[in-house]
Image 1 (spheres, rainbow, N blue to C red):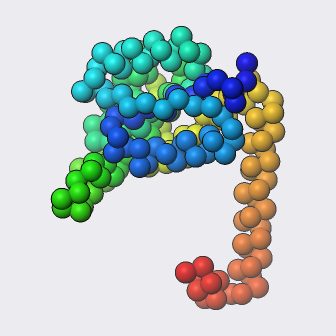
Image 2: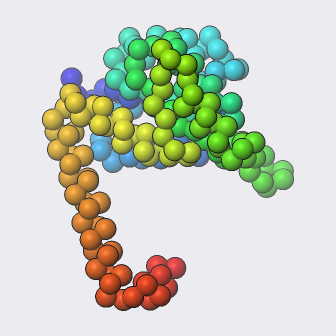
Length: 189
């Protein structure tokens, strides 16, 4: 089995407006050439579809599901209650950007904290791993860590990725030391 030939990660979101945030997960998985399947599954508007999706994910051999939702954010917990596949929840703060008339985004009632708490406070027995608000890219990295337990080459790629991050921080630190804080900040703005 290969992670680049058939989807092992499912990315789901409650509505199309969540795609603005959830594409961050797809970008990371694409960068690492990890095949994923992306769908809209609403816990509230399409509850039977949610059940069907859980069965589809299991029969398709998915290893991880990344589920993003805003507001009450029931999708991650509900999908977790229908499957034994690990679920990573992404709380979403900005949603419903389809309101083109006003030109304003609609924000969740508590700046995403409602979503974060809804996902992270699942009852015992229906656990969901939760990343930070709007942190879909972190969900993808966590999904890759799960897959890396099975794929040694992916583990190697993740180790290289960490070294790239490490070296970037060292380069930036040297530049900061050389330029001084004021010039460093001006150069970056």
